[in-house]
Image (cartoon, rainbow, N blue to C red; front, side, top):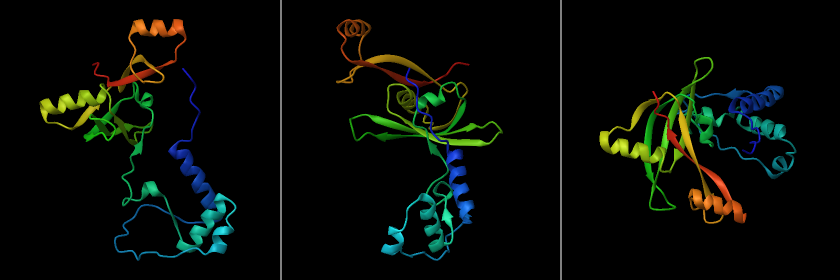
Length: 204
């Protein structure tokens, strides 16, 4: 399995940005009720924009005009604090609570995809809030069938997280291959790659 390139966590990114702001003496505005706040309509002139040579200078310029720099993920008008999980492998064997799931029609085909809004427990008991999507014959189909039978669309604790099954697909057509076809592809050196279907792990 190829090694994925490490990437910064949300906490590391926040620490980096806050460090830059602190060095500049810039105040960081966290979430608050701005329903009665005066709308800021300041604009930057060509000279100011052209003078930006670094991220720190951009931060300083923004702060000089608006007084504070908002953290987008902490602004209730823009989001709810849930982050997107890009790789479902991160949820394999990880306990989490599904608060809700929603079904949406796919623009790419005649099928559906499912949005799951979830919470897991962090190392210190804090809530780790995240969302992920699925449009496969695994999670999406499982929840669709369950909802049709029960009418329920949330409040499900997945004690053992996700599990997965592996299979191979043709590199060009993306069609799933049978075991016999996989053997033929190996002999003929035709291009294929591994794919996975994820499921809710329902083991007790």
